[in-house]
Length: 382
Image (cartoon, rainbow, N blue to C red; front, side):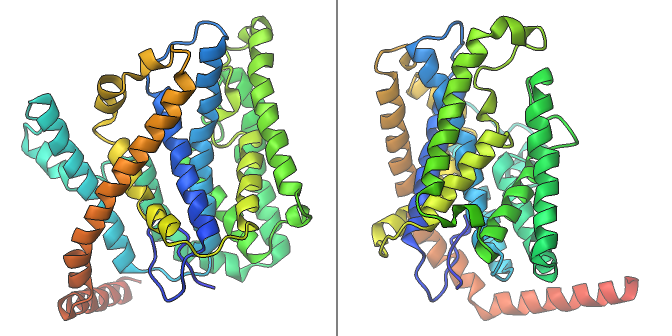
């Protein structure tokens, strides 16, 4: 079954599954709420109500990212690579970067592009890593047909061994030894692209074989609750025994917030399994809102970041209020809705410009010529 299961918002004859689209919406809200606390400039001094809320929301951002990539692996494993989708994705990223830079310049009453190189980089947001997630995702999508070919060519037992290996290397070992460095992402040449590949593989495995452990009813819910409770309890444990941990390193009390910690991995997979098995009828509103999630991310976490969190929302002050959790939730909802409206407008523009060109005979001619040239060059070289 081919449906839309990634940030590219694939179009096909079958309607997208609203249970997964709902998870996409929730994931984006989790990411926005995480950015609210993480980029606020809030300084942790002691564990109290406000600082606990801040550290609890630390867990939500990377959870959202993990869920997005699990969704991608789950659906892309049985999908074909499309150059048109790649073009749309890159153009969407460039649109939001250019739009955000123009808006930032207007809000700051300043000229942000002072050199030719600044102007040049403006049109290559992916290459110059203006959004870490967007660049990593583009790379993942480019590599997906080769990853998929490899996955489909190996046996289930080999796939399981591969998953055990990568989880051991980039989750279990970093979680244990990361305590010494207060960082689980600087061991064994780890980087975010590698972790995306790991999550993609897990999502693909769930699609092809499912995880036997989660087949029994309510197991995924129990595991999700248990893993999150342990993450919350870890905040208190690390704080209470800070003197012990400080002998190794000044340990972040929300240590398990990073995407590759074993508790975050377990939480991500169990929540994903909950929504995979959730029965929701097709809902146009859910699917429409879910189609805007990449745009919401690009709009709120790009050049406008500092202006949004520190000037408009004044998040550092809000997090010291007794209503901090309300500020976080309401702000996340408003940012989501505003971003959704902006992206729906962008989609309408794209439909009447980019999509028309990609569906035209001119694009077909250009694409065919490019492919023929590429084949000739490859044949002569290899």
